[in-house]
Image (cartoon, rainbow, N blue to C red; front, side, top):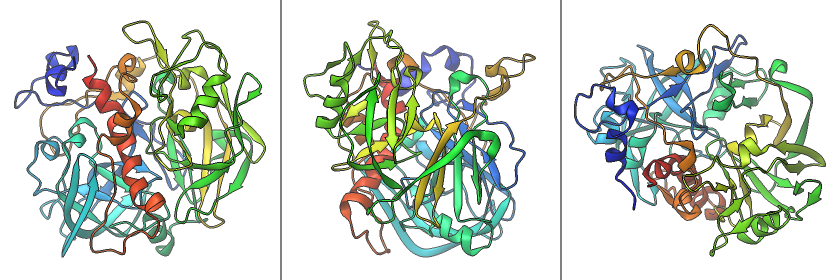
Length: 449
């Protein structure tokens, strides 16, 4: 039996120590990134559980700070607006005309639909600054949002795909504003267990300090507007699963890895002791598994170690694979943060390719303070300049079925007042499903009994 989320949060030890302006207020914990020392670079904060990765963005004449989910699987960008009175908005940073003298709100509606609700509002424009670069940008200003967003620290979505949703294409506008030396951006994600969050995204180049060896590139496939490349195969302990030959969508906005059920079954078939569920969507694996999964792109192998692809023990002492047999994208893999924490990733819009390199080992955290004390920010109250967090417990993060993980707010992202995507499989139906994966994985974990 599952407890309601707010009941769960109100009974948690962290919640008990906080003073709430109203009962059952959710709390957000933010594991802040170290400040990068390279130009055109911003640290990637996270929720402390490797579920959601987001950046600080400053908006408008007064530089209002907002957290935006870094999402290479979305073409739409939006922020919560000050006229949104729902609970999910009330506990987040919101943007309105009182926050910026230059904010312009157009008489033009937008609506993005997900399986459990919608995000609706007006199209707005203002100066947006990220990584020290400011430029005029149009985005959705939400007045209605699905309650799923109550469970996450970020205040909106920063769409980094190459498609057009309800807003300007972020990468296109950045290029037009002459902010980039090269038409690329590069991502390094940190895992919470490493202690110090050194994650960052660099626009217009790469940071050699973040990777070792060469960057190996794979050309984009035929999925228009998407960061998708063909995958050769996935292997375990030197044995290939023969699950390649199809596209792999590379998505910073997705927590885990999803694939066609028959492919995922073949993969777990070469992992000793793996046992599938009755519907073939989840797989229990031995908790003492010590071998990596090896992903191959363009003939180059990249290892994903058990600390990332095998879940911690749940209350029953069982461990679950973070590779799910659920077809978020028809006939394709969806490769999220479980993989991306192990590589340095270059998204090359100019040459239409994605590159990977071995991620450099993070530097040891300072001994003068614990990682929790140094990197975790907790505040209380609906102060617009602060964001609160209560993260789900890692041991319960795989209690849900993949369709729940994929459809928490999932379904179809349907932009209004814009030309609709030509390919529903990749630029409409898929976008909503991917955002659902990003949002609901942690939310549903918190609801597990």
